[in-house]
Length: 130
Image (cartoon, rainbow, N blue to C red; front, side, top):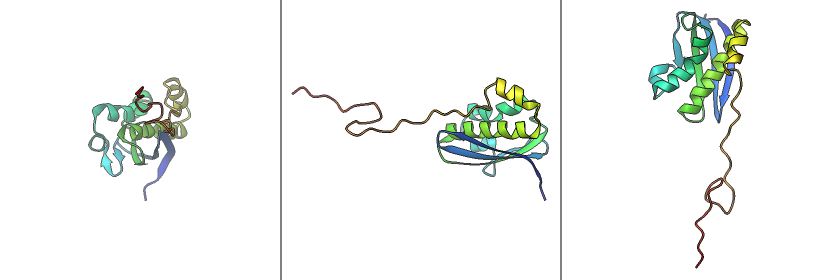
């Protein structure tokens, strides 16, 4: 049986990622796919790998992520947040470097709701004088 060393939950917009850290060689699986295959752009993969690079533990652990909700950018941010939380749980000495790089902070920005009588959250219908 495979034992999880650390677990973390990451959130961004409406995406939620459950992260499991295991002993291994640096494999990163997102929804049973390789991270580079799951995410569309290289920037998204870099966002996900950022906590591993900061703590220089990209070859120490295997990471399994289950992510749902939102789009790919939100999911990448959620994965990054979850990995950072899990790594600080695994080794407390990682906490300071992760905190200094702002990886433990949950990005609380959400989409503003649409208001009635308007086309969007702030966009109004076109005004007609005549």
